[in-house]
Each structure stands twice: as C-alpha cells, then as structure tokens.
Length: 364
Image (cartoon, rainbow, N blue to C red):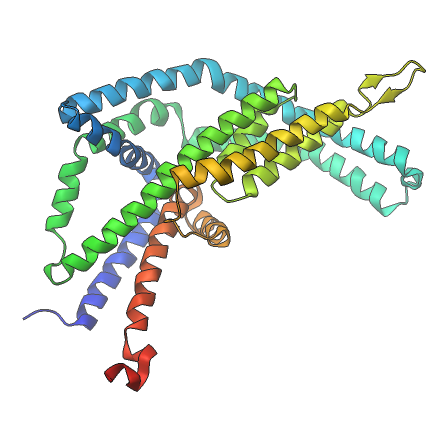
C-alpha cells in the first residue's frame, strides 16, 4: 500500500528541511563542491558533444581539462594581475576623485565654499569616510576572498571535484533517476527537464553573455583610453545577468570616471582648458552599443525566452540567499531562483486544474 499524499509531503518536507540545515551549518565548507558541480554542469554538454564525435568519456574530460588549464594559466599570467592592479589603483584614486568633484562643484556653485553649507558638509564627510574606511574595506574584501577562495581551493580542490563530477555525470544522473519515487517519476522527470532547460538557458547562455559583454566592455574602454577600463568592464559584465543593471552601473561608473579624466583636458590658446566631450561620448557609446548587442543579438541567440526570471525576483533571491548562507548563498541564489520558478509555474498549473480554483464548475 502506497503512502498518502500527506505522508509523502511530510517525509519530503523533512528531507528538504534537513538539506537546508546542512547548507546552513556547512556554509563555506561546501564552496569548492558547489563551484566544482557548477563547472561540471556547464561543461557536460561539451563532453557529450566530444563523445558523439567518437571520443571516450575519459578522453573527452581529459581534453576539456587540458584546455581549461591552459585558459586558466593565461588568465593568471595576463589578466588577473592587471585586474588586481587597476582595482587597487581605483580604490586609491577615490579620495582624489571626491576632492576633484568637490572642487568642480565649488567652482560651479560658489555657495558650496560656505563651510556651513549642508552639501559641503556631506561632501567633507564622504571624503573623510572614504579615506578612513576605503583601505580597510578593500583589505577586508581581499582577505575575505582569499579566506574563502584560497589558493588551495582554486588550484586543487575545485578542479579535482569538477573533473570527477564531469567524468561520472551521466552515471550520477542515471542513479538519481533510479531513486525517484515510482508514483511520480513521470512528473519529476518532466520538471527535471524543464529545470535543466531553464538552468541551461540561464547559467550557460547568460554566463556566456556576461563573459562576452565583460570582454567587450573591458577591451573597448581600454582602447578608448579610460583609466581603470578593465575593472569597469569586468564589473559591468559580471552583473549583466540582471537585465539593464550591468549596463546601467557600468555606464554610470565609466561616464563618471570619463568626466573626471577628461573634464578640462584640452588646453586652449588663451591658457584655459576645454572638456573633451568626444572622448566622453565614445565611452557612453560603448555602453549603448553593448546594450544593443545584448538585447538584439546575444540574449536572443544564447538565452532565448525560456528562462522567465524577472529581475526583481533575481535581486530578491540574491539578497535572501546572501544573507542566509553568505558567499555560497550568493553563488546558488540564481540557479535556485530558476528552479523555484519552474516549481512555482508547476504549482500554478496544478492550482488552475484543482477544485480550489475551478470550484463546482470544475465538475461540469
């Protein structure tokens, strides 16, 4: 005799609660396994494609590992040092930028020279806060990042976990399928396929969009001559998974830095200076072109319309999971939000088919 719906709900509810509590207590301990699993999930289609071309699973994983190792080596040698150097330089320049902003505002608005002015007082407080806390904040961020993503995790644990998960991915999926409750196996498989499509569209597709946009912004801003263009491009690409937010934040930062860099940058014959609006316009055009490419080419081709995740839902998921589980929560927030979206749509379908929604008319 099978279990009733109420009994099944009770058992599965307990299992989910235990799983959530395990995440809560383990915290950052499971970080390398989360990263390794995410990498294996993203690379599994490539391994499947290589198998179709005649390679064995072991050879396919070996080829992927070799290419990934070479790519990571190039990042370590070429990109990461420059990125760290520019980030440090940008943080060190923040007090100078605030002083320059204060001088510019004082020139345009002489009333700000009054020490009792509210705006002048707030600017002074902001400059003092940045000078006092800026270095401490950066040191905290870097030390926290190194404490979580230390060299051992990056070089050893994550690649090893990803290698073995990728090697046994198909076997793990088959084993999980065998453990599914037989009464609901068809429904769970259908939901699993929908979740996989959603995750594939968002993580693989949107991840590719973020990488392409980040590389484009970094290279274009650097060619345009913007100081710290690599950092701005990296930040804009990193948060491009939230529609319009990446371009908005990156555009504001880039145009703001461009104004500081090229305001009064052209010497005149009379000894004065003029603003280089052409350079500033080029920086703004970089992000306008990026938005056009993202909305009309990259997202439709790589992501499609099957994700169905609202930007507000993404921000909410990032806030909740980040506050509950810290850095690991931030990593799993987006895929979990995608999975919950699939379950929510399934729940709405069941609700519309139920007597709770249809009432007595559902029996007609």
